[in-house]
Image 1: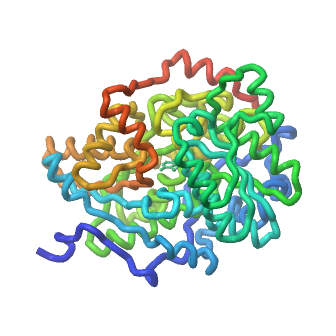
Image 2: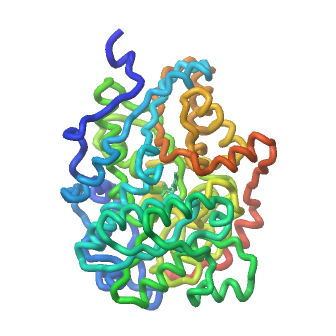
Image 3: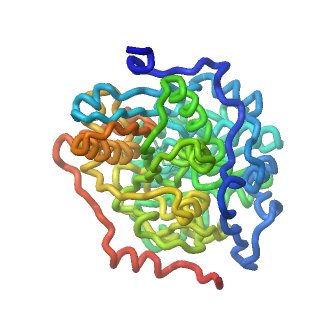
Length: 457
Ligand SMILES: *Cc1c(COP(=O)(O)O)cnc(C)c1O
């Protein structure tokens, strides 16, 4: 047996940590469609985004460069938890009786317990460098809010967060974590913004949604010159920052001489999935490996598998630019499933484009199947996954059991993008057999899509 056959935890030293992020755009057969100004319907330019973002991030949003150097100040903070470990899930393989080899890249070792600080840290850094005083943002499950609160504290920024009401009530520990890192949290919809007041006027008991919370955070940033807005997923620069996950995983798999046959990941806005998958897709497009790449989304919020590829707003109030993406409609409010981070009406425009090009597949899973995989994983590997990556694990288990039937020794790679230590009530519900499955009906999809803005082709 070689070391590679024995390895359970595959580590990189700090000096082996990648020093640049990867931008997939120049390697794609065609560029993604332009982002449009909601008033003129013309492609937006850097100045249109300047009230919300610092120029360094706007440049990254639009860059045609294949690689972007990671600033030394960001690498310094990354070193608190990066490089993150890659594990071979030997005990899960054994429990499933599969000949497949399962690897998972674990991002739960970060200060927020997820992949979100990979982008929160550079976003806070570039804003602080541009002289911004305060950041606003939305958060669903609270992961992104925690990450940005931590990152803001690293660079001396104030941070104000609108948290989706359903999660604010279900997950009080996230709020305490955010406040411990020094940020302020409001439940959304709130009385603090026009967007929030408009929703509360028609629905005082609104559970909120990421789209509503984004409207509130954007509104406050747009009205204050010293305040910028930060988004935790969806945008190109967020996906760019997350590619450090895939770049590390490539180096780690090379250490054990493995190449993935299947890559699975969960998709909310698409950032952890793209972060893991894009560096491997680069290798695939260059003919150096040929993994099947599969996105997994919740059946109750299936933007890739049931949404339409169309121009839509990123928020509920319709304040953001129009982005062409797989969407369920900007006023769609998903059922409050436990995977709060996957409750977003749209998919990253860049990932949507990659999907349209046929470079990735997508499947949808209901939450009980996901929690079953999560519990199975916890019992064998000793980590309780966040509800979001249980979607990836369900697809992982499915693939591994397929290998058991066919006898194929496939290499499966997934991102375990966060731990579930603050999501234990959801596990409690599952263990007590008190969890329902929600699948979006065709009728509900039709109703949701009725509110799409009309954009001439
Ligand atoms: C935010 C979050 C997600 C969803 O966001 P993506 O941009 O799709 O990665 C998934 N998992 C966890 C743990 C999250 O915190």
